Image (cartoon, rainbow, N blue to C red; front, side):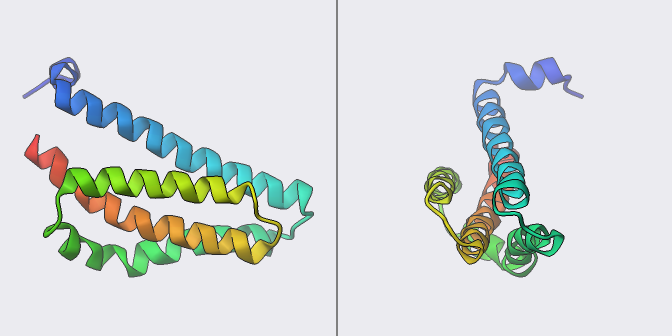
Length: 128
């Protein structure tokens, strides 16, 4: 049985873990920031804020189970890097949104890309 210290001593796993820490933290900061912006800047209703969560969760539920089939045929490292870069660009697009439907569309796309990231991460962890 490996301890946490033993696991983090592995250079490849440590890089993956730190990258994931930054990526997941960024996703949640973006989600929280958008919810705050909808609530306080756009004077949105609770339904508007809930719409962001729905737009984020629906692709994970619908696309997620099928994404693993594609990821198994792709290079997991390239998939993870491309996914993170795409998610970064989508987050930047949030700065230029002016309508609620644009925010919903970006979070739907963000979640769709994340649906491919999670299986690639699982493959990488098992490989390491």
